[in-house]
Amino acid sequence: MTHGSQDAFRSLALQHLSPEDAEKWLGLLRPGVRLEAAAAGSDDAFGRLGGLPALPAASEWPVWEGYGPLSFVASIDCARLPTAALDIDLPEAGALLFFYFDGQLDDGEALVLAEDRESWAGARVLYVAAHEKVAERATPDGLEPYPVVPLTARVAMTATEPWHPRVRDAFAPGAPLGNQYAHPVCSQEFLDALWEFDDEVGHQIGGHAHSVQDAVEIEIAEAVLDGEASWGDPRLSEEVGGWVLLAQFDSEDSANMMWGDAGALYWLIRPEDLAERRFERAMFTWQCG
Image 1 (cartoon, rainbow, N blue to C red):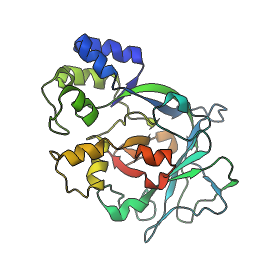
Image 2 (tube, rainbow, N blue to C red):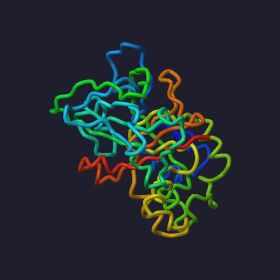
Image 3 (spheres, rainbow, N blue to C red):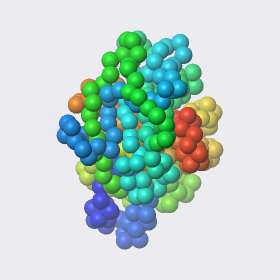
């Protein structure tokens, strides 16, 4: 929902919450790596948006069968990320490559949707280990690569919506999933203060996702459960708690990236799959205003 420094969040929380509630809320913050556009030719790049991916010779370009190849969105250099500062088990070396069927081939007719299992092949994460020999791969016919935008990185604390299960369980166990409840963390004053503090989605690795609409974890959990669990079903809350943000990529003018109506792309993964480097099990969703 928002990002900033621990001290800034503490100051904000103490203005709206009791000292006890403020400390409890601060304990729910999570560190994330915020990625921002760097100057062209920067030597301090932790990854980049756009350009061409560096792939091992044996790796095929990701394709959504029946629809075509995916567009290359971003590359993250794991060795340069401050992984020790995060609470997710990212590789210490190698690269994460993100691909998405962005509508270039069909003028946006086919959509990649979490709730549509048949479309899941339209978004992929590839992990390229540091020992693998790679070469830059040309974009398949019909696709135009996005302009290269190098990315700098900095660690920031992140907060999530008060109706996220982790926060809800801390302040109102059993309250309906995804809804406001009777507690100061759900007060309009506190919510307004959080939005005024930071309303930018941005690019990010780890931490709490900055959802444009409902919590992206809920979207993923609903999709995994095939939409068969209502918001009052404890199975949905349990499933929501089993996913963490791997990466989010906002719309970015300098890279000519526009996801829907100024929206964002999100990849989430189960911690156990992340630990086993099973990036093919990552789940994708996107949101826009």
